[in-house]
Structure formats: structure tokens, C-alpha cells
Amino acid sequence: MSKEKIGKIVRVSGPVVEAEGLIGVQMYEVCMVGEERLIGEVNRVEGDRATIQVYEETSGLKPGEPVIATGMPLSAELGPGLIGQIFDGIQRPLPRIKEATGDFIRRGAIAEALPRDKKWHFTPLVKEGEYVVQGQIIGNVPEKKLVTIRILAPIGVSGRIVEIMPEGDYLVTDTVARIEVRRGVIHDVKLMSKWPVRQPRPVLRKLESSVPLVTGQRIIDTFFPVAMGGTAAIPGGFGTGKTVMLHQLAKYASADIIVYVGCGERGNEMTEVLEDFPKLEDPRTGEPLMNRTVLIANTSNMPVAAREASIYTGITIAEYFRDQGYHVALMADSTSRWAEALREISGRLEEMPGEEGFPAYLGSRLAEFYERAGRVITLGSTEDNPRYGSVTICGAVSPPGGDFSEPVTTNTLRVVKVFWALNKDLASRRHFPAIHWLQSYSLYLENLEDWFKREVSSEFSELRKEAMFLLQREEELKEIVQLVGPDALPESERVILEAARMIREDYLQQSALHPVDTFCDPKKSYLMLKTIITFYHMMRDSVAKGVSISNVLNLPVRDEIARMKSYQMIRSRSMSTRLLRKSKKHSKTLL
Image (cartoon, rainbow, N blue to C red; front, top):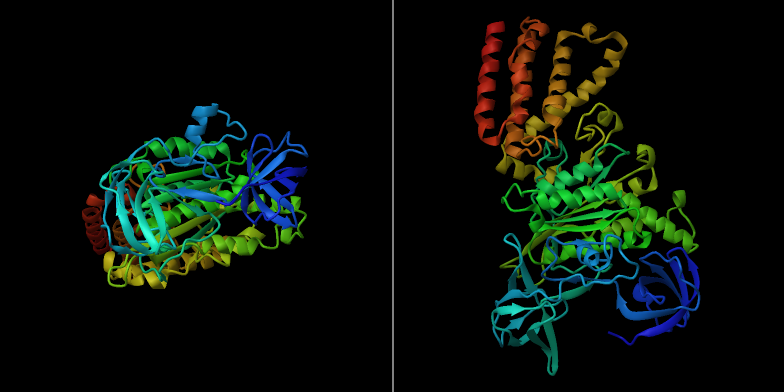
């Protein structure tokens, strides 16, 4: 670490502080501001004068108080102790700060992100004299039953192991290996490392993903899937279910690690997350969900500058687990509140405003964040024995009044490949998830086609296309129905309306509160959709042969199809087969 530089405050404007006397200070360098040593970050330099955004409340600061530049950028501590932890936007552990200061966090409170007093069991995987490259695994530390922390050779450090500690218990600050980078230059490897949050961690190679992130939400997995290592946006107005949708993804997505970033959301929503997650059971393993989750909470009543840093802290933690070979899903709720923090700080810096007052660099900042997603071959692996990892980013957007043409939404849609459009009318009709099937899209469908054919069914793609055709045709027929009523339509078109209604209500609607329906396996989704489409074919054929549509609609099997979603997967196969047989029997009876 470079020598500390000391200056003094000359101006205070909200979270923005100007200080002079900081010769040689760098952009994004961390500073300790005022007598209480509030944490801040340099975001403008003019000669010996620096502008600092302070991550805490600045009331009471006055000109003349000291400012100390640390010589280090804002960095995340990475190592054992991250899993199950709750951090604020700059990675201060909230439970430990609460123990020290009480329910209300005292300004200037400091606590190390990783516990310094806890020992972890280290098992070496290399020997003295062995040559290691950057990113190579040199040892393991079991943290939870589901997660093993892999101690990696630091990025930029390759060389010969001159000393490796024996298996045993160590603190995160203890040296467990020493690498000779070049003659006479030794690098100490500890269980803990640090990484600047605004700098992406390098990888060996980025890959195109051909595996979906299974979410358990039928409308997503069927029509608008996101690839593992992909990017998705969930824009929607107030009350359309963005936060609940992110909660569902965090609970049930097929990722090894979940990083949930609450940046600028209401405190009661974040409280619900903090209270619920420790009680939730991981549906895949039966372990507590917190045993593979990291939470970052920066609510709307917390300092606005720390909100801007929170998503960088979250993505850095996600990249750390990706580099170890894990598949990570990051939920950001919401990037609109993050963009509002950018706007406020930009205004106080007197920068030229862009559209709707947002800074001109809003689009590039959003792109920098989302482009850190991806499925990769990590550093330290070889082409013969690759280590794969991925970071999938799902970001909620809260456009004012549900206006998708506002700057945050439009700039987000330029960089993400999946768009889950939440619709206010659907939410008002209590249709959840309120994702509109005609406004949303996914650019990963073609890449994931082979996976669905191989893992679900060879006919799943055709069923999906036919279901989407029915929903599109229903939208076209609605205009005629509003003019002349449904009874004026030919019976063949009334069949389409009924089939589309079954898809909407019996398939796409899904209850987050139902013990069974909250998660739906893709194979169960396929069986449900196949049953509905097969019933539609029988309705169409029966009506074509002269059977009245009203007789078809009175069949008792329709009610049983509507109850399919509440059946467990084990019963779904037999239930689907039984309903198909019953539908065929009713069809023959009508004819």
C-alpha cells in the first residue's frame, strides 16, 4: 500500500466533498473523510484538489477537517466467510456492525468483511517445487456443506511453490503458500484476497452458453429462457411483481451460488428477504438456502453513494465464485434506484445532464455492469482440463409509471438479451407472474434449442411455437370480440380463444405462495403444455366434425386440466397420461 496522503475539506455538498492538498491522489482511490473517518471514493481530480463521494451521511462535516487518502481503490475482501453473510453496499457486514453499534448503524462504523477471529480448515493440493499459474487451485477450504472455497494462485502471480503449509486450521490473514514469481521475489498467498470492485476479473476465455438457467417459472422456462451466463431485465411499474419474481429466481434458479443485491429498494422489502431467506430450504439439497447465498442490502434510506457502489461489490463477489468453477446468479433490485444515485451524484458534481437528468455516461455504466456476465473457462485451467464457471445477471428496472421508453429501461434493453416485460393490466387482474407474452423476448432460444430437445422432449419446441401462435391469434381475435361479441365468431375461432385461455390461466399463471406450484420442473411444464395442446387438437377436430363448442366446454376433464399445476412431479406423468386418455374418450363420445 502506498504512503497515506493527507488533505483538508474545502467544500461539502450532500455526499460530495471537495478536498485540497491531496497531491498524487488517483481516481477511485478510497479516502477517510473528516474526524469520524467516513469512507469515500475519489471521482474527480484537478491538481491537488479532489472531489470525493462519501458513502455515509455527511451532516456535520465542515471545511478544515482532515481527509486521508489510503492509496487503494474500493476493494472487496474475497475468501472464506462470504457465504450466508449480509453486507451493505461497501461490504461492511451488517450483523457484526449491529452487535457493535445497536439497531441503528453509527456513522463511521467499520468492520472487516471477513471474520478475522475464525479459523478455517485448509487442505493443500500442490507440493513444494511445483509450478503454478495464476488462477490455479492450490488448496481447498470447506465453508458450508454445499460450498467449498478454492484457494487460487492470485491473478498476475505465476511461479514455483517454495513453501506450502500443511493441512490444518488457519485465519483468513494467515499465509498458506509462498510463490517465487522470479528470483528473489516471493509472493505470499493468504486465505483471503482483495480485488478492486470496478475492475472485471480476467478469464481464460468466454464461451457461448448452450445451457439454460432453469428458474422453475413456466412462462420463463418455456417462452423466454435465460442462458447460464446470460443477462436478463425485468422492467415493470409499481406493484407488477418485480421483487417477488427476483425472490423466486433467487430461491429456485439452478445456480450453485446466489448473490442478491438490494440497491435502493424499500427497507420493508429487504427486511422480508433478510427474514425469509434464512428460513428457506434449498429445494435441490434440503439445506438452508442461505448456505449458498450472499446478500447485499443498501435500502432507499441508506446513503445514496453506497448504493452506486453496491452492484459493483455484488458482481465482484459473483466473479470470485465464478473463478472457482461455480455457476452464480446475481439478482439486482433495482438498477433504476442505482441509476437515480448516479443522477444525484452527477448533479452535485455539476456534470452536464443527459436525458431526464441522468448522466451522459448512464448507458456505458449499465453496459459495463451487464457485460461482466458470461459463461467462461477460468484462469488456472487448461484446454484439456477446463474449469467452467458462469455469472448470470437478472436486473429489475422500475420505470416511472411503467414507461418502457425512459432512459434506464431503453439503455438496459440495448445490452441484455432477455426482456421479461411486466404488465400492469395483468397484475391488476391478479395474473402472476405478470410477464406479458407478446411484449417479452429472449435471444437465447436458438442456442438452447438442443438442450430442451435433449433434456426435456424432442417435441417441446413445436409445442412452444404452437402455444405462442394461439396466444398471438387470441390477441388478433380480441378486437373482433370487442366489436361483435364472442358468440358472433365461428366455432373454429372460439376453439382458439378457449385454448388460449387455458394456456394463460392453467399454464402461464403460477402462484409463488402455493407449496407445489411455486416451482415447476421443465419436464412437468412439458407434460402440462402437451396436455393442453392435445386437448386443443381434440376440440378443433370435434368442432370440425359438427360437435357444438358448448358441449366440448362442458366436459369435466377441463376442470381436471386446470388443476394439473397443483400436482407433484411424481404424479404429473400418470396424471397427464390419464387426462389425455380421458380427453380422447370424451372426444369419441361427443362424435
